[in-house]
Length: 193
Length: 193
DNA sequence: CGACAATGTATGCGGTGACAACAATGGTGT
DNA sequence: ACACCATTGTTGTCACCGCATACATTGTCG
Image 1 (cartoon, rainbow over the protein chains, first blue to last red):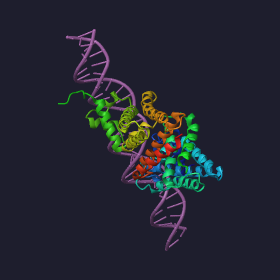
Image 2: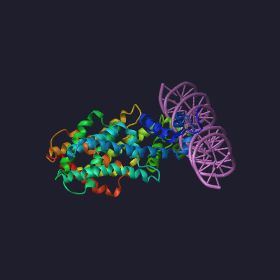
Image 3: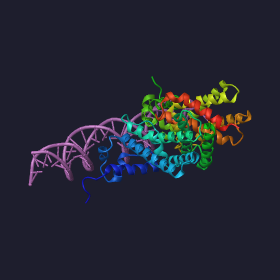
């Protein structure tokens, strides 16, 4: 006999939401449907998420944490040299972005609720990773000295843009690998001393 | 006394939709609300758009046409030399993208309806513009010879990525100008012979 | 002039998010 | 041990939406 209280409804909802997000996209995500799937009443999710947007924001925040972890692993595997590290982080970013297109869109949607400072903080972490990598490239003499943040943003923008074009079906995924290589190579050539 | 027939409801709806899209975003766009605004019954829009997605697709298609026109004007104003033309088209793209963030998102959303070949065709036009510009740069000897399409995509991706980051509030708009310059300069350095 | 296609209307269905009032549960302080 | 109370889930309701169907009006063309 099921207890009156679910136990950990919040986590259950978030997990189910992330799955449905990947399968059907953010538009199709319905609080009532998640409630049905979790076996609770249609108003139960309201105890854990003030409204639909709060749920989406929580998904986005978790997404940034997962992205951060993914990129860190890629960097660790890549070793100490700058260029391989750059290739690794770029490939990892694009894999994440194309595997979880809807989640990425949510993360970078920007139309979050007001008290969404947590998201901004979570989002700054991957930016920091890029930044640190650029600084390392400058220290190793592979990149020209200068405003590392600006350079890092251009790099991130290029990767993010490629992901957007592929996720928007304006590019066929088969081009990804070649495009990634071209982009990274051009970046290194463009930013070297 | 208003006539039974509106006259040009389709155009009226599209115009109102584009305005509300800019003001409130695609999520808030409601067919019933547009109908109210146009002074017709809530089922009238159905005669012109099979469903909500069809309306969004029409907006996206019109958006691509307007983007194309905007970019062409920028190129014409810029004169014959490659680098100024590159700066001009980049600035024009980013202005369009940040002025009409929601529209741009719609255009590149990719989740269009099945018979959306028209959108794919409309979308290919700006790509063609980029491509032609790259070819011109190669002919003028400013860019290295090679796969112009791949290079053009990387350029477009960088611009689109910058727009995405700004529209997502992950970058403050004040950085746009400096970032744009950095991106274009790095691109030219990275793709030159 | 009459049939017909195009366009707008009236009405209803199922689904959704938000809200409020109520009920069960489990921990806490005395 | 027990009353108290914050937490969490339930039930019921409301307004809104997209979509569908049957019907009304209009202009056009044979």
